[in-house]
Image 1 (spheres, rainbow, N blue to C red):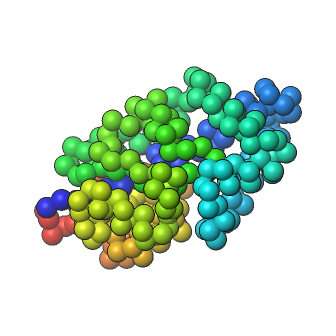
Image 2 (tube, one colour; image 1 turned 180 degrees about the horizontal axis):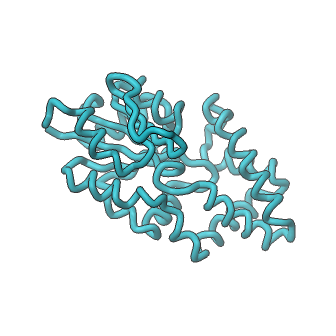
Length: 235
């Protein structure tokens, strides 16, 4: 029986804070402002942008979010886009994967699941995220990659989970989504009728069962164990 495991990217497999730090350094190189100031502003803007996105505020996903971030940073969208491009040349771009990401993807693939990326985007397109996954030796594990700017859908909408399930040729109840966001990943997947695994690296407990179809893990290396429990009737 076909089972699908979808992974959120930023905050789950790749460290967004580290990427924002690199982008801040590139904005600093262009503008002459301190990277520390820009980094703090970027993090604050991200928190605000998450709320705006949940309310449906970014219809033209990349463009609208770029304008939002740029206004908070006091720069033009052009400077922001150039800074992202410059960041892709930085050696640190290949050091964004969390320590548990590679093993988790490898073991999930080895267990025979269809492995998919399911990511929202902000001010850079999904193709850039694919490149960063490649630079971190993670892209090859995915059978399918779905990003919000390319399909015109965003988590936590039911439609984007339905889309990736159809693309994989599976029913939603045979899909388990892994991510770090309560709203976008956990609630989004459960509301759509899929299973959900919430990643919380600050948790004091390795594995927590949150409900019939939902688990929390501290470390992604625990994922194979959780997936077996989620679909225990298969084993």
